[in-house]
Amino acid sequence: MKKVGTYILRIILLVNIAVIVLLLIAAYSSYLSPSRFPVLSCFGLAYMVFFAVNIVFLLFWVFARPLYALASLAGIIFTFGALRQSFPVNFGGGDEGRSLKVLSYNVMGLCLQKPHKDDDRNAVLDYIAASGADIVCMQEYILSTNQHFLNEDDVLRALEMYPYHATVQLNYSGNPNQLACFSKYPIIGSQRIDYDSANNGSAIFTLSVDGDTVVVINNHLESNKLTAADKAAYASLVDSPSAERIKENFFSLVGKLADAAAIRAEQARAVRAVMDEHLHQPLIVCGDFNDGPLSYAHRVLNDGMQDAFTRRGRGLGISYNENKFFFRIDNILVNDEWEVVSCKVDDTIEDSDHYPIIAELRLAD
Image 1 (cartoon, helix red, strand yellow):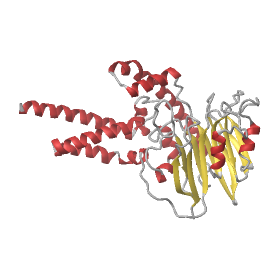
Image 2 (image 1 turned 180 degrees about the horizontal axis):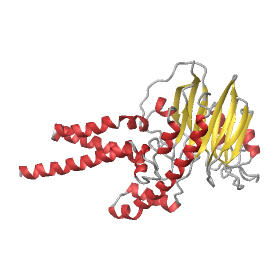
Image 3 (image 1 turned 135 degrees about the vertical axis):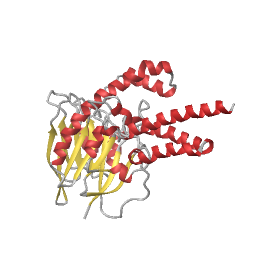
Image 4 (image 1 turned 60 degrees about the vertical axis):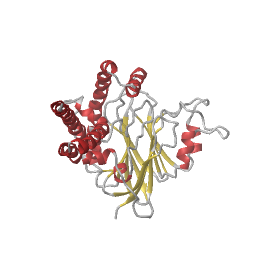
C-alpha cells in the first residue's frame, strides 16, 4: 500500500513539473516571435491559470511532501516578473500635485449606439464628459451622417469641454473606422502610422501642453478575427471544459489567435520605430493592443517604457468585458519623462465591449 502511495505522489510530481514548464513558457512567451512560434507565443494569455494551478500544487506539497514544494516555489520565483505584470498590487499613489489625466477607450463603433439627446443621453459620451480627463483617446471611433444614429454634431455637443479634437482614418480605402483624440490642450499635428491593415491602425497626435510638446500614439492593433461562433465555442469551453470540446474548438481558437499575434508583431515593430523617434519628448502610447501584458506586441511597445497599470494599478485589470475573454488588452504606456500617479481600468460602465483605462500622469522633474 505504501508503494502505491509513493507511485501516486510521483505521478502528481510529474504533473506538477509539467505545469511549472508551462508556467515558465507562459511567463517568457513575449520573447517568442509569433511568426516562428505561433502557438507558444500565445501562452502568456494563460499565465494566471498556470500560476493558480501551481499555487494549488504548492499548498498540496506543503502538507504532503514539503521538500517537493520547492519545485513549485521555484516556478513562482522565476516568473515573479510576469506575475507583477499580470497582477500588480499597488497601494497608494504618487505625490499630490497637478497631473494630466489620460483616458483611453475602445468605444465599440460609437455610431452604432444611440444619439445623444437631452432626454435620451448617450452613456459613453456622458461618461467621457464626466471623466475629468484632459486627453481622451478613442478607438473604433465611427460616426454616422444619419440623424437617427450617433453623428458628429452629437459628439461635439456632448464633449464641448474639449475644444481640440482630431481624427485619423485607419486606412485609405474609405473605411469609416477612425482613431480619435479629444483634448483640453491644443493638438498641433496628427498622422497615421503606416502599416498594412484593413480595419486596424495607429496614429500619432502632437499636443502642446503648458509649453511642452507631448506626443500621444493611439493604437488599435490587429483584432483576433474570432467569429460569433468562435466566441460562443470559447465561452462553452470555459463554462464546461471537456476532452471533446477541447478537440473540437481549442486548437482552432489558438490557431486564429496565433495568426493575429503574428500580424500584431509586425504592427508593433512599426509603431516602435515611430516611438524611438520621440523618446526625448514626453511620450504616451495607449489604446487597444488586442493582446495581453505578456505578449510579444506588448513587450516591444513597453521596452524602456512604463506600463501605467503595472506601475500604479491593482489586480488583473480586465479591460475586455464580453465572451469570457478575461484579459487586460487596453493599455497606457509612458516614457521616463512621466511619473505615473495612478491608473485603473474602470468597470463601472458596460456600454462598450471594453472598459476604459485611465491614468494620471505628471511630468518628471
